[in-house]
Image (cartoon, rainbow, N blue to C red; front, side, top):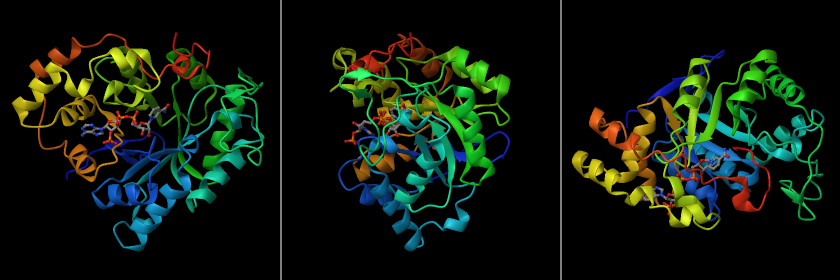
Length: 322
Ligand SMILES: NC(=O)c1ccc[n+]([C@@H]2O[C@H](COP(=O)([O-])OP(=O)(O)OC[C@H]3O[C@@H](n4cnc5c(N)ncnc54)[C@H](OP(=O)(O)O)[C@@H]3O)[C@@H](O)[C@H]2O)c1
């Protein structure tokens, strides 16, 4: 495997352009993460809300113990990309949130700590429920935690050495524009839903122009959302789409490799998730071919501005992306 990297602003850290995503890694996360690292993944995208940080941390630890990766060599080639959950946006709770993640994962620092959603939910004591809930008694309850205060605390985590880089997820251009007016440390990355049905071309271009790297989540489109969302149930799965299949067979690659390669060629990082070792391995094999102009033109036509990770799909009535 010939890994490529994206340079992060301020630190110039090299973030692998392909990593492993931990959402829905419920069954034996230790073994799955160990397997991903053994097969060459050097970026793990995790989150408090995925409820598997202890197992993910154990997988990392086992890989280090067996000499597959050395912790002292991890800087620059390995990123723990762990996300701050919504209930801990208040400046009083950010430090405790990262401390909990670091303790659960048995790590001293993360390479990249990102705000999962720009949604300041009411604080719930982790002793009562961890990670905190979206809904309290069936309702969304917000708290007064302005983004500029949260961002200052994120910057403080950098100064304390607990997070080497800080970033954002599910932010739109308006909020990023505002954040850039007060940030002392620019976000290193923006993580967003991105696939051929939701290409967000102008957002990606503008964000990259600001010196912020973009990471795509859900590169395979509806695959992860069929249990939550009507639109995901009815959309043609991207992995089975005729256009993607034709491009894949032309290059003698899988549809998944085509979808990942499409992002990478836009300098957008990808973090595919799979529970199967064979797919874990094949998803990483995206550096041995190139899409041509015609492939890009055909994929461009698939853009329908079709989003699957809408909060409404989970019965959370916040029109975050409207
Ligand atoms: N910031 C955010 O708000 C946010 C939101 C969503 C996701 N994320 C992150 O992004 C990561 C990736 O997104 P995702 O989990 O939604 O979905 P994804 O990686 O686009 O798709 C995962 C699905 O595709 C299947 N799959 C994986 N490789 C395959 C292959 N080669 N051929 C056929 N099927 C394949 C998986 O099944 P198998 O497991 O059976 O292979 C799984 O059902 C997440 O794990 C998470 O870390 C972040």
